[in-house]
Image (cartoon, rainbow, N blue to C red; front, side):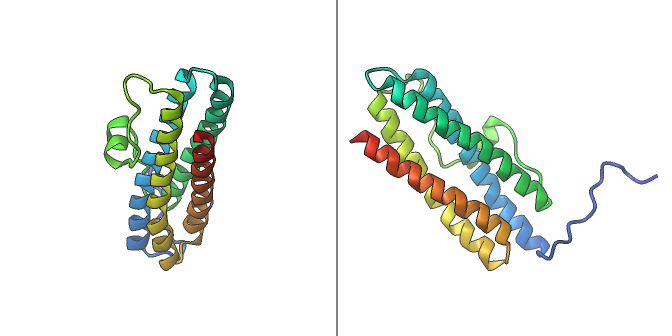
Length: 163
């Protein structure tokens, strides 16, 4: 009797080595995206001061987008035939995003930290976009290019908000 849990081999025109390499890069992007979503959500809960209302709403928009991106990235990893990583420890190993401090910083420091994190995400994405393009993985390249635009715009908006 055939194993009903075994998936059929992936045969989409991308070489296995290329798929595996891109998926490994996506694992790090997934971890960083999840870490940034969690950090942004933490800042949403803990922001205080005269800018509370605006930053509280801005952070909510950002973490909502990031959590949706986590799902898209994980599903792309699966479509490439790999397993998406899970667990906070593994995400911590793979992420370029620094963990939120134990004591929440002042609002202006939250904004500056998130701007740096979005810049770090942009730097993480660029080489993987190139790699995906080189192996003709247009789907991954497109997904990551879209995410790059989000991170660059968000970093810019946060820098403007910082003054």
